[in-house]
Amino acid sequence: MTSLSANDRKDFVDGQMKYWRQIAESDGFDIDDVPVPRGTRAGLWSVDCKHPRFRLRACLPKIYAMVGLHRYNLLRGTNFEHLELLKYNESMNCVCSYYITSVAVDLSSQLQKTFQIRVDEKSFGDLDLTVSVARPNDEEKVTIEKRFIHHFHCEAAADDFYKGALPDWPLVDDLNNQKRFYMVKKCELQSNDWIRLYLELAVGVRYQQTSEVFVSLLQNNDIQ
Image (tube, rainbow, N blue to C red; front, side):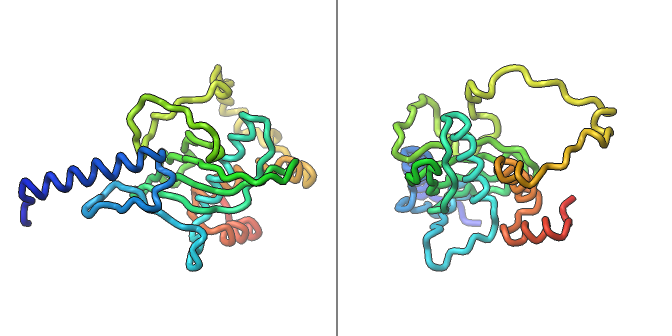
């Protein structure tokens, strides 16, 4: 293996520093014109969802966008609904961070807005993730004096909305009690769309499949 010369090493380091500086300037979202330097092993893949050849091979980016909107609605008391994906950037890891740009519509006013949503996975195939950013792209960004980290496990600060003591974990006898289950009525599913959303999230994370496969799994009762 040929080692790099001093000039080559300097060019590589300078290219990496420039690349990550440009990534940090947009918080990882608007990097369409930022080329990935040669030799980069931990950058961001960019996916243009409006490209004629684009096909959503996995449902996670869409579901993550919907989860981010649900977070925003909870905190702001709004009623935005996911409309379409525009693009997303994905870290080059099995356990990924997603920087999603999507369009949502306010169901009360029919106003459409473009949102930026960041989701950081903490483990592969498990429902363990953090939504650290969920905001309209025209909203004033909060400046934090902290180094930009393109993928993190425990760096996101919790909102005040989520702070406080958690309830005690149920006892084993409580978990084994079959009477604790409740059959959700159709009208309740229709009025609480978050129920299906988080079911889709759990299944999507587990099976890493497209929405069509997910629907098939539900219909055939193949989800365990």
